[in-house]
Length: 284
Figure 1 (tube, helix red, strand yellow):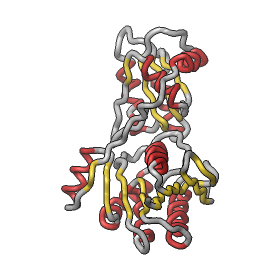
Figure 2 (spheres, rainbow, N blue to C red; figure 1 turned 30 degrees about the horizontal axis):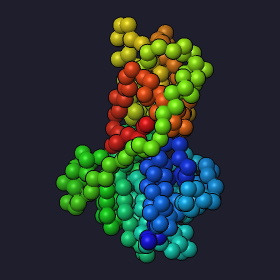
Figure 3 (cartoon, rainbow, N blue to C red; figure 1 turned 120 degrees about the vertical axis):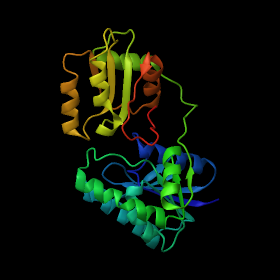
Figure 4 (cartoon, rainbow, N blue to C red; figure 1 turned 90 degrees about the horizontal axis):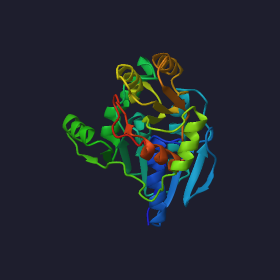
């Protein structure tokens, strides 16, 4: 039995993205009789137990940039000063600043989820985040990547092994096509064929704008359904709605129920995801 802590997510249960990867790992580790703690933000979760996993909510600032940084530091300090773990798993190289703190007491695993473009962060924030990459590669005891491409690229660039550990799929989840159909009806769809794009957070790196630009040029295309949270990048959301004007495009908010999401995926005649810099998307 190992005592494992995860840092770098907002907590469990997840709504998508890195949090979904953390949840999948933590729940399976707990089912294998390990003692698992997931650190998260008190802004979006609360302390307690979830499917055998201890969820530890840490208070942090609400700021877009300062909030995640303060959260990471407080989580690392709690782990070092008050925690009792055998290993700490850090998710996202942008959280590499916590590794020197954790290294005072624990061996660490760093999982690389992708580099990403400037996107919603802005150039200064993006540069600061990416400055953590060399630190992550230097300080982590073990480094993994969800992408084989990035695993090879990082291994060559930094001269140390980066293990490829891809994301998995929940085979046990049954698709709910009826609920998916009702969802589409509420958003103006009356059945028939449709194309589907979905992402937890619809930000520039997901490639939705490119998809809409291409969709406008396809004659006789079925309706296009865009599923995901547009609130993370308001300017980009406005850009997408403008690009969709006059087209048979239906915007659907984030679908957190995986049964409904799988129902949408199985009902669509085509799934389209022209990503910009995804390491390995967890959509679906």
